[in-house]
Image 1 (cartoon, one colour):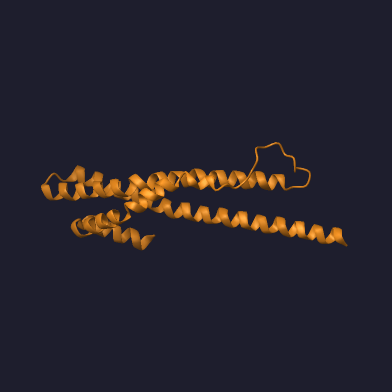
Image 2 (image 1 turned 90 degrees about the vertical axis):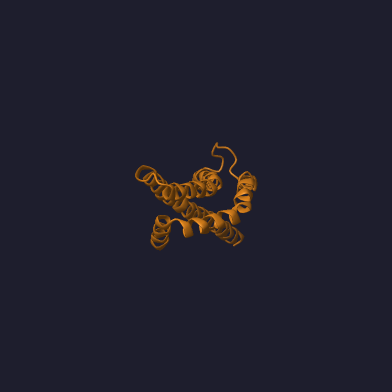
Length: 166
């Protein structure tokens, strides 16, 4: 009887741990996709506008508008792209860990010869300074975005289209 109970507890623990690991993976995947919308898709649209305005217009009004877009791009992506790149790598590592962990949890593979798989707080500590810089510049970013939306008609239209699509 004790063996059945202990086997059920062990099975429950493995199922619970598997569920938690998959939830964390899903959360990280969702977060990375959310950042990707800005870091990749929005960035490409913004760069397209900047390049198009540089190619088409040479008067002062468009140079001013283009300058505001370049400055906005610098403020936004200087801090966001390193965070995005970190999460790309972090997600890949998390997938590998879960795969190895699941392989080790198969009966007979307990002593599978791989490096120790543990979740460590240190996994995220390295990105904290980048988040701090991003947060410190967030008000500046919002002010810059508001300014560009008011003073650049083309960007305002494209921004609203992008926002409605995403």
